[in-house]
Image (tube, rainbow, N blue to C red; front, side, top):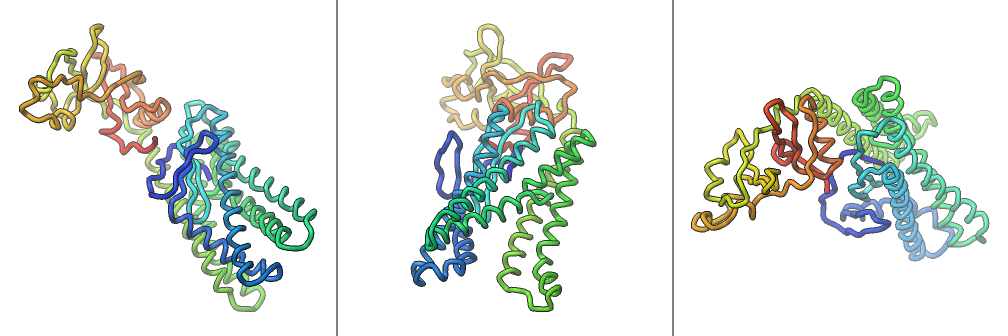
Length: 369
């Protein structure tokens, strides 16, 4: 799965860097390995002893998790090819997701290409494993390869189901987005289809048993409920994000901005403290009058009172750097998108009376790197 403009995973676990991507493996991913091993344990009954059967199940589970990581790499590589910053890749209990920050050039075609890359990679693994299994003699290697082929085929086709948060949901979003020219409508459509899929998945073991006149399998019920719950929560998150995006698009950026009060590099924290009021930002400027950084009340207040006359405000300011400037008629959504594209905390607006400033840490709950 891919998630645009999403938060980086902050849970504890194993973290490493591979192919230039930050990969996070929370401890709950071990639950996924255990579930996979238990579900596929019976498939290795004829290949070895009882102890060997468990060992093969564990090896298979780890290989499948590696396949899921390859799936996410495919998403990340395509996003990177479009020039999008990739926040990271996270593996979790029943799959994984890749987060990236799209630029203004992003559209339904790019969304679809990034989304479809994962299932294509997974189905490619399934094909390679299937060919290798056909060539391997009967035994443990054949059993693991055959299981890996079938499992990746299931994962690949499952991810193509048309509903959020699956990759097929991103394809639905892209299709509706392309037709209606509205990203929000596409996201809402994918979210509702995802909820429908979740309900259908939970009901599937009972409908299957009813069609055959038997009793539903307890294992199938447990798996269906788990996957259905994950789909429902993911689809619901997509709907909330669509609603939030609509609100941000309707909110004028000027309503979030504050005027700038400038002080020179020689200003001390004591001199700046009285200026730190809620209706303005205080910026330290260089010799050309350009802002170097913004002084926050918390940073200034952290300086002991007896030292404020000696400590320069420049020392405690948050550096502006190459902060972007956007038009005054922009929306809050434009501000958030610009901040994510440039990895900048501050965004300037060209207001009629001069430049004003938005501190995204102050007005948004900013997630990301």
